[in-house]
Every structure is written in C-alpha cells, then in structure tokens.
Length: 148
Image (cartoon, rainbow, N blue to C red; front, side, top):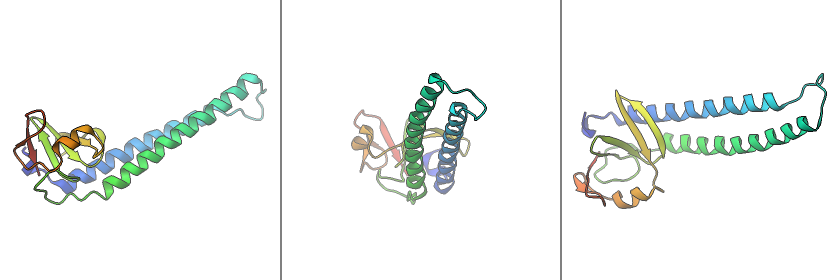
C-alpha cells in the first residue's frame, strides 16, 4: 500500500480512537491509584497511611497533567485537516522507506487499514527538516519522502 492508497479520513478516525484508548487507560490507572491510596473509615490511620495519601495526591496531579495533555492531543487530532497535501504540513501522510507517519500529532504506533502508522508533531526536530518538502524530495538525511 503506497501513501496514495491510504484513506486519510479512516486514518484520522483510527488515530483519534487510539488516542482515546490511551486516555481511557490513563484514567483507569488514576482511579485505581486513588482507590488504593485512600484509607477507609474502618481502617486505623497511621503515619504511613497519611504519607500514602499525600503521595497519591501527588500522583493524581501528575496523572491529571498527563490526562490534560492526552485530551489536547485528541482535540488536535480531531481538528486535523487531512485533505490532500502537495507538501509536508499538518495532515500530510509521509513515509520514509517502509515507515509511514501522519504529521500533526506525536503518537506512538497505531494500526489503520492493516498497516502501522506513527505520528510526528510539528514540534519534532524532524518536522523542521521535512516541512514544505514535496513528494519524492529528499529529507535532511537523504531518504526520499513520500507525501500525500
């Protein structure tokens, strides 16, 4: 499957689904951590319990920051313009050899249309080297870039 054969709307939907699954997993981890750290009314409370509750509060704040960042990624992905592109910009699908990326959101590998994709953020150093490149041009490391 070349980058020309990719249904970009389906790719975007699969990306959003992947990001939402990651957010759900994070939320479950927060809930579990909070539940385990809370003392019940029937438990005796000692210094260790208070320490664990304080630690749980710190972890909850850290998880909340992660959740907030995940929600930002979901919003960015949902708003990504995946229309056809002539140059590398957000919403473009680019490939370097066998690896295929969707530009606009940094994300770990996910599956779509029977193929693996990853995401490249516009903040990533590699984006500076490929931004504005046309299909079949060379990236900074002399690998041909395919863009759609």
